Length: 153
Ligand SMILES: [Zn+2]
Image (cartoon, rainbow, N blue to C red; front, side, top):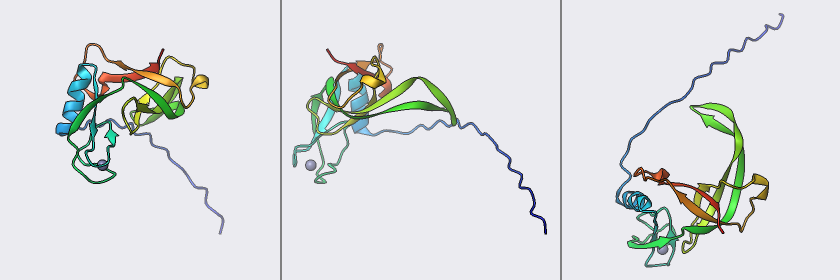
């Protein structure tokens, strides 16, 4: 029996979903403070971890965290990646210029915050680079009010 030729059909289905959900009191305050150009973290009274974005329970010692502290607006790049493609409604498109995403340890925090670093050639991005937060102005009462980071200094 002769082997049949297999026919492959490719279907491209752009994805465009909108989700609305309540973020809870910790992220609500975090977002409100971003509007005032402040980055607020939460400190654990048990182990001393300072976590941003804030969350209710410490991942280290399971204690409820309730001490608010301001961190940043500057910090240090601890790790990063450079993206040469982006997703736009489920479709892969070239990123021009490339997108640089970094894990940033804000001054005063013990956790990392992921953020885009702009204003630097991706080849010049390195661990230990000092960066500062750039806020959306005017504020939009959104997580995107902390828009991106750029080299400090
Ligand atoms: Zn703790």
